[in-house]
Image (cartoon, rainbow, N blue to C red):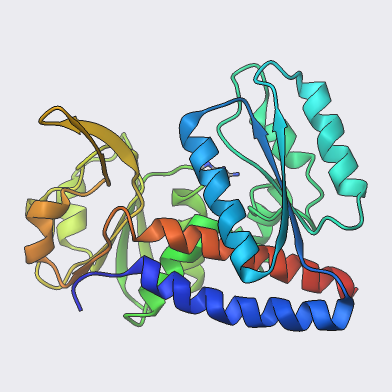
Length: 285
Ligand code: GUN
């Protein structure tokens, strides 16, 4: 296998999730319910949110998008979250990031009821993951993990995670460590990045820089997961590329995930899976 086809894997997993949602509805007479809060009109965020809604509908999850003006105050946003926290029909709450600069994202995330925090971003859920007893695992790291475990045993593997964001790099490092991999978390101040990558079995690139990982950083047994979504202009045309120089790297590795069609569809699958799991936990309380 060369291409790690996240789209295909997500389609298979979504079929299984659709079956679970059908059984859920038959048993509890409601669908799992996801509320997405979108502040402003960031083009990329709007596209993500539309994709999430479309997939939710396909797998049998009810979803609602709450659009708020980019000038909304933090207090008004917190009031919306409070009403979603209290609303018994809502199982999962997602506040699309990034938020406008005048809003304290950390405060907003920490005001989501941890039992409805479908992203797994609030302090309690991050803490549980760090302790190895997770309740909700952030969607992109979970998607990366599912792609990797589908092709290899992770125990004892050396994994270079590039990028220490709270959304991907840090939670992924916790998750892979919990699965007995040996993780090196690389960031903007790291030294000897090329050597660390060359010495790793697996590279996960989540650094947000187009074509950052070079073909000279990999070997023929490398497995590469590309989390990046960067818009560049190439020969006058807009193009979406990942954090890995895919064209040059593809022929040099054992397996690599493409952009698009790699991590993106898996992230959405994991969001919907998390929604189902939170709904299921709630009805079984
Ligand atoms: N923005 C980019 N990725 C994500 C994500 O996984 N969750 C949220 N809430 N916002 C994002």
